[in-house]
Image (cartoon, rainbow, N blue to C red; front, side, top):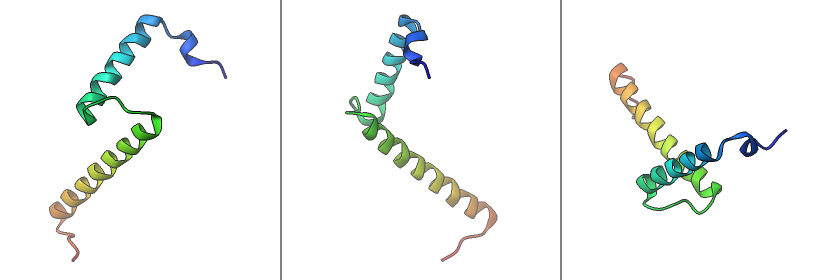
Length: 66
C-alpha cells in the first residue's frame, strides 16, 4: 500500500490539519495528545449519542423497561 500523504497536495493537508485542530479545540479545548486519546473520545461521544437515541426511541414506542 502506498503512503496516502504522498499523493495529497500540501495545501489540502494543511487545510485538513487546521480543520482537525479547530474541531479538537471545540471538542476538548485543546489538541488531542495522540490517536488513542482521539479514538477514546470519539467512542465516548458515540456511546452517549447512541444511548440517547435509544432512550428517545423507547419513549416514542412506549417500550420503556424498568
